[in-house]
Length: 201
Image (cartoon, rainbow, N blue to C red):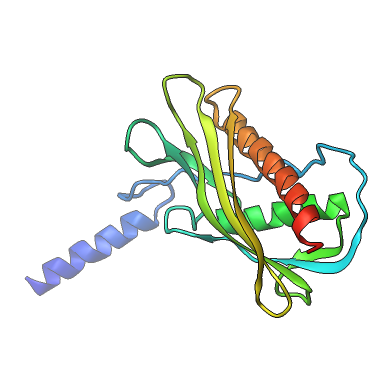
């Protein structure tokens, strides 16, 4: 009996080793997406502040702390797009986008990750970063970021919340990704205006 079982085991191993022969389902690789490059939506001139701003990676719940592209298809249903992923976890991707956008605006002497030396630090919590279907199609992107500006002494300087909605041009994933990019650009523009006021306090 033991010899019979060993023979079956060797036979299965040999079959699995043959080219094109597998009893396991094949997983289709996911298409990876990144946000479109950050763009400056205004050319408003501002005085560069002689301080260094460090941007922390946004905190986020379990659903958003991943590279899944989240979608609310209807009602209270939560899902993710099949076969599509962000190229990195959403909070890390958003941090990179905010740093790039604020660097372009030259509001601060330096903008970087808060892992580098800084004078002011921007903390945040990512509350929403998903596409949503409603009575109108195509879907819209819902982005909400709660932020707090902290001084060198770790004392809060100011805090607020930004809520952005951006309608996609179609329900196709590339167009939804572009809507995420447009929403992030609008967020960066509003954040820059807010920082221009409160970073001087």
